[in-house]
Image (cartoon, rainbow, N blue to C red; front, side, top):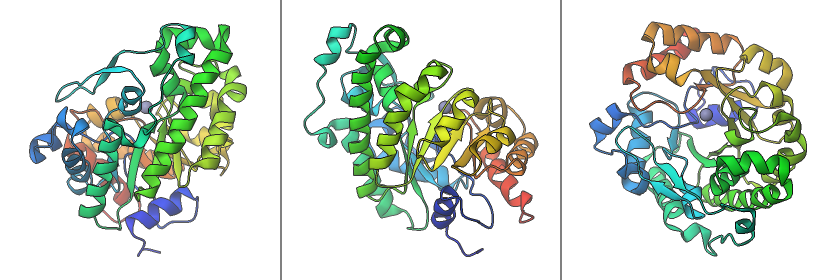
Amino acid sequence: MSDLTLKQRFIASLERKDVDKVPVCSVTQTGTVELMEMTGAKWPDAHYDPEKMATLAIAAHEITGLEAVRYPFCNTVMPETLGCTVREGSLDSQPQIIDFPCKEKKDVAGLLVPDNLLESKRIKTILQATDIVKDRLSDEVPIVVGILGPAAIACCLCGVNNYLMWCITAPEVLKELLVLGTSVCKEYANALFDRGVDAVVIIDSEAGPDLFPPPLFQSMILPFYRSLTKDMRGPTILHICGDATEILDDMADSGFQGLSIEEKVNLAYANQVVAGRACLVGNISPVFTLLERSPEQVKKEAKECIADGVGILSPGCGIAPHTSIENIRAFVAARDEYYGLG
Ligand SMILES: [Zn+2]
């Protein structure tokens, strides 16, 4: 079993098969300032230029040892495609949404989805980056792409205040946005799979308890997740930020192979709840641990995640841009040490 390639180990882990050791990677953003300086592929250009996007994503694998290539580095691809206005960010800050199209309920019906979604500028950039990554990378390394999920897309399109209000006062309007989000998600994810991406991460924190009322998750979100996972033609991971403990049971029934959770979720408890229905991905803190603590402390917490039964060792959320390469390497080394390979 030790002759598994990184890709075989990653996919086998998602399928909850026995592996020789857990993979260690990030299923969330991997761009850091140090990597940008070393490669010249810097933010904000690396969000918009496929060549730079591919270069920075591959560097995060080759230079730090993380066992997947993961891009893009922001969550604005679909929102901008669907009509949000985005500020491009800087070397160490991600692009931000500064305006959105659905100010009022009546705006939802008039929302225009581009006819040729896959030809739109930002999505095309990701598809082109995929071609470049495939060309430059060994076929043995998994390629992971993050895209926003239906709740996140809905929230971006109507703004967080409307989103919070409409889920109580106008659920039918919010559902229209969720229908749209689900449909664009399927089309985009399947285009990625067709290009050879190995796993798609659906980033959908706006469906999590930090924003969305957990009692409504089952009726309003779960059906969309089931529809998504039924129609997406490849392995998928659901990432929800914050403390997702309350909805874990439903998340495990949503059809995603992997569930990516933050450090606020107790991993040992999560394993009991999920009970083999999905592969748990996580969950050391990207900020309090990976960014701010020493390599030794990073190792200690990473080994605790493995001991608690994580399926894929990963930061609980996006890597902070000022995280040191040294700490990311320690994160990878912790996995080897755990298995007596260090
Ligand atoms: Zn997150």
